[in-house]
Length: 142
Image (cartoon, rainbow, N blue to C red; front, side):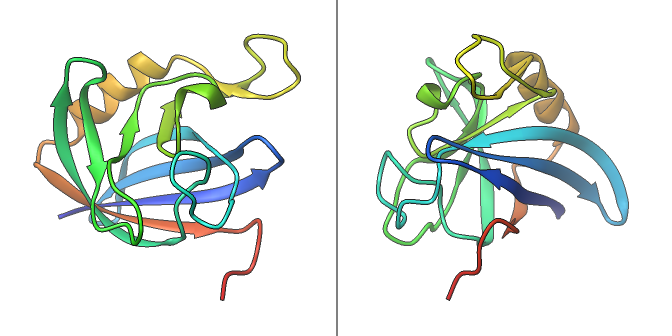
């Protein structure tokens, strides 16, 4: 099974920025920047999810096309890894992009080239699922 690592590196009142790396064994086969909401006690629609290990399954919808659902998040459902550039696009999910830049000049860094990045992820994952480990270096969880 493929394994991914999401390392959260920066957080402010509106969002959390990090790095996503996908491995096939010990070989890195994909990497991207991440955008999530800040930690607000795992509240639905306004918080990122807790650090931990999750299974992500391939999914398709008319809205997001091919993307992944993060399974078995305690107290939450329909947490997705999908395209989106801005913190207003994610509602508790994880958006992937090529870089962190302030696209819309609002003072917050966004993720760039999100649709193309999701296409690259979908091309890299030839299986129906992968394991995701989320590490939050911005705080200590108990």
